[in-house]
Image (cartoon, rainbow, N blue to C red; front, top):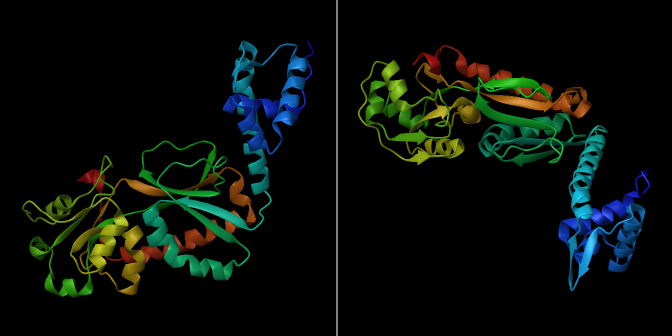
Length: 315
């Protein structure tokens, strides 16, 4: 039996047929005729000196040799596909794909994109708005923005370009601010709950905020939202007061659609991490987006002026 590797086309035909356990379906996937695919597999079996499939009536099944080859062949082609995508991304061909959560995408990124597009018309941005953990290689992602605990373990294969600190404080429509001018008056206000960060070990809540203000709050009730952007939208409509996250409400605060009149702000032990594969941060398109992002994050500091910032770990 020869130790020389067989032709790649024959291995590709086998991998597809082994995955589908059907010559017909494998041929359709590879856009060849069943006869051509069968010829490739037969040549592979001759190269090996043993059959890889048992040809049964209307179906096929793998032999012991076929089973031994099927797993490594699938892994090999997946590795090749990943390498090919990675090689293409190094060309900086004008396309940049960013993934972030749906709330951060709609409330933070989307309102600012006109500015980036004006200054970088050569870059085509694509966004994957999801909380699902994506793979930089297999999902064709260039930059990921993810929210998580500050004590999380960093991936050694990734470059951490930036951290965005979040904090919360009562936010409301300007009309409501006139009705509830003091922290104590909020006890009588319609309360909106944002449960999007309740998963954190050191989370923050309305009860925490009232307690730090020295106010004994009764049991609070009101609509609860699992998505932070929905709670911001509700507050912006005048439905109530939310303990809003500045990262997602910043654009509304800047436009005067929301106000945050009280100085106490609570800081959850979590941050947005801006990540990319190590080495990718020097590519022109990636660098341009990261520099723009850092500049925009800096503008959020305007909302910190004059506030009492209290870490959640101290509560």
